[in-house]
Image (cartoon, rainbow, N blue to C red):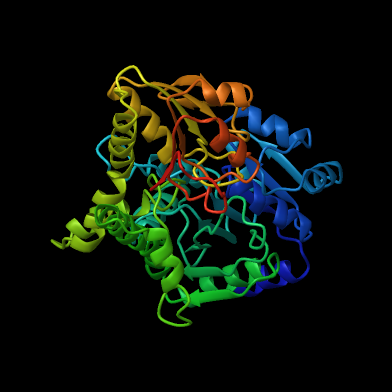
Length: 437
């Protein structure tokens, strides 16, 4: 099997499958097709399947013309029929791994995908999980499902591994193609063959590790590292505010040190699909071993409480203007979880809006990238345009996303009060009506 697959990779005869055509899956499918491998994408959402088959892109990190060209050439197609697995030699599982209502891992999408794949899995196929999850998922959950459903033996009839996605929406330098990849397979042969497959598609380094569990843990480490450091700077920011010190100036001074320090900045909370969620996967798994991840859990408490802290600060700002927050008109600038993208998954700005409304504020939002968003099954429309007249209507403007295509100078000149949680007004001259987090 090993030599058969290596030969097929070298001749670009591998047919690739990608389960889940979201922020991870679609860019990966596009890169595989661009590398010369016929690729079939799967998604349960008919709208995504129809969009791909029509050559219409819906992901910011995919070039529209690339997608259209690949579809026209027959290199890339999409389906909602899981039987396509019978046709492929390689399948990547790129489905969501959210948290449930109890803040515990919801791996139902991974499990159901593995069960569906197992029904059509054939010999000499590589299966790779890319969805972020707790250490042990590939070997403890996916492997038994695939073996039982297919009647095949892992390592003898098919290869199985884990290769964590590394997607940073809006990053102008690192995309799927040039971001280093980690691969951990069940057995050395599986690792070698799967890594060879990725090397045939990507331009980046491929780091081989000894097992899927190592690869699963390193992905959790990447995002827990950021969670903890952001928690540190958010807590330090609260202390600096009490002491009358600018935490932003402190960080800018600290980052002049050329070694031993990496700059992290405070904000209204954590967003995106990874950093706010992944540490929960680790703390949940750690309890199985009677281990409490105290440092990690403390950072999560700080970051989870940041939206409420920002609303508390907003209350004090309004109070100084002799205005109660109950009944105040507040404009939130930005609901994307990071600047210059249209992704609002786990956005702290949405939490800020919810916290403001809990205390009686009348809240509107404006985001040049997101005209409306859906939360708790309900769509919420933003204001259509940001004008001097509109800004002047609000008692407080809160900047919650650092979009670069917003005229903050105009906002400052027309707002009664501005609470800047992202330090986007740093370069402005006049700051009499601005408070920075």
